[in-house]
Image (cartoon, rainbow, N blue to C red; front, side):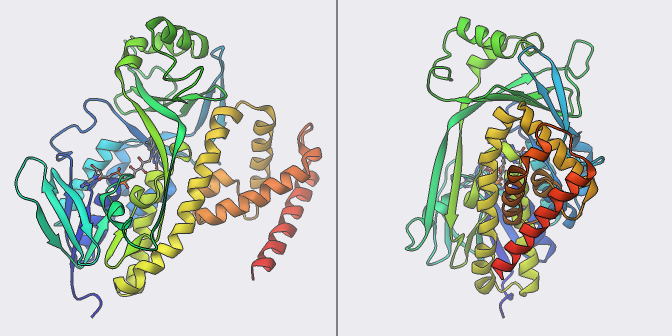
Length: 456
Ligand SMILES: Cc1cc2nc3c(=O)[nH]c(=O)nc-3n(C[C@H](O)[C@H](O)[C@H](O)COP(=O)(O)OP(=O)(O)OC[C@H]3O[C@@H](n4cnc5c(N)ncnc54)[C@H](O)[C@@H]3O)c2cc1C
């Protein structure tokens, strides 16, 4: 019987590993999670700093499926749109979608704690401070070392899932298997986190319900709200070069940099120079791999497809991995041998698509959100969406607020680009009339039909 064995090991109890453990426990599997870090219920894994993420439709859909949407809700701060800050401190607001559509700021550690608590309530066994060193894919054995000393444990199960993040130990083991492909690309930019504390009166220092962006061409600064009325800020900045983390060394240079590019931030981050010097600079990596499975081992989430954070989709796509895997598993009676290769093949194209879109969005966020033509195009697309809601869905909305697969969103977005480019005379320098919009929509409809026929 394909589903007669009900024991599963998950490596990594981060966001994706903990969520998957809940899905599996609810289906009656005995799940053991090995996590190298301490129990998040006891220890603050962010060491006092709040690191937050944007949770949107795909993540919420996956949480809803296991009945967690309401539990997570009090942890969320809605962000209705982008609030852009120019170099003179002037702001400009762009809604993310239609009325009622928003993304949510959530603390990584608090979300992880909710997931771990729920998983334990469902009977999942967590072995914290246990590090997986490697996996033998031929024998289906994981080699687990207790961090605080003791013998390495060799353990097995009917399925082992590597949800152990961008530098996955299971993926490392896959690299010895013929036919396994893998790529790793570092961005020339790194990032550093800073905090805007609440004001003296205990209020948010900036508008609470938005994602703040300071776009500066080759770099940018962003801020997301936290429930304690602080903001977690991230500076995405070149690692090397004339103006870079490497070049900004002295107190004077750092102070001058913030005064010049972010004058409105200086008064709201006390000791910005000291914070900048003290906090670590981290790198950003894109990882692609294929296939995601070898025998009864599977890599999921960042372990199989780590992406840059500029579409806010890394966690959301990892959560959607869990949702899609379980949907397929149920439809195939948990026959792992048949379903794992199929899942990997189906899902990989979507992971590649969101990976490409995330890189593209970096340029959009740091460079274009302040560009006149870009802003005009957003307005025209919103008008098209209002008039033809089923035909024209802006790419950001397809990715963030819908169930379109990421690969469809990427593909349709390219067709939209083409139509907007070819018809720019109608919308770029004047306000298009309703018949202009109908004309653009018709051109798009013709292009979609032709491209669907070509794919048949
Ligand atoms: C700056 C930044 C901002 C981001 N913003 C967003 C956002 O707004 N929205 C969004 O959707 N995504 C965002 N992401 C992406 C998101 O953080 C990841 O996609 C998500 O955390 C992936 O979850 P995961 O469980 O696959 O991996 P991880 O969160 O990395 O979890 C992996 C877990 O495995 C454990 N582990 C690692 N190695 C081992 C081992 N050998 N043995 C045992 N345990 C191990 C780790 O301790 C960790 O707990 C952002 C990422 C960055 C860097």
